[in-house]
Image (tube, rainbow, N blue to C red):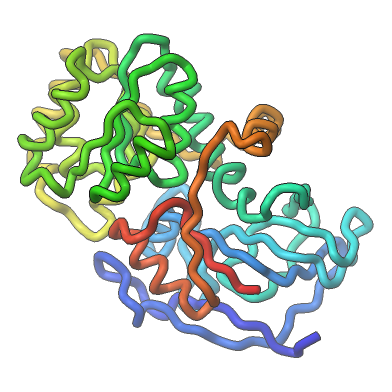
Length: 339
């Protein structure tokens, strides 16, 4: 075993979108597991938009990453040393490893994986993104057959599953994605009834017209992943008693784009249309994760659920992949393969 590990540290706090100089690749002594801990050699890392918020020194639902601290995140890997009887060398596990080649973690925070499925599914379709889609649509979208659902960032790991679950429940599904290729994937791979390229629409008004043409009866559920122009386009199309689960606002992660100047109009729409707008953080719902796995694992294993993964190679390339993801450069779940 090597005496050194590698990690990606937060070098400084970003202003707007992160840049490469906000990260640093560092070496450190290999950690030794203490009593009740397991040493994991990480093979794959998950990159997720929420990590941008953890780079700021601001109050939020989770603690900020310290300067020189390892970037947070979930990973999968193999146990190479164990001081807990529940895990043995060679076990495939997932846990909050951070952006690192190795991690010594409490055994109680790890989950053993079924190696009959690709381990990366634990980071995407059967991990936090999949659980987010399943929980948010069920609890806050409250879909009913015959309704219309619109999904922002529709080919991402959350949006693509939201669309598939809604379609299976008998809804008309409208994908909003960035670029012709992502729209093709939304229709052909994920089964959306319609797909709209927001990049081909100059301004919110043009995008609204395009969405309205595919949702002639209005929108009953808008799954919010982006904010920005898409939100501005969708709001006037919402039906009375519509629902908006707010999962993310990635369009604003790099700074404001002017849409907040229209807040009074948005707020009034919520009132007069009696909309249910629910912000939710999946960390509040982990007690439902076993039920999610019980329902979705067989469907994924049988090929009934489609998913895409965008895999970058090498820990040193995690920052570039993360920066690209925040501006829509990925196709599917963004993962970094280490080994």
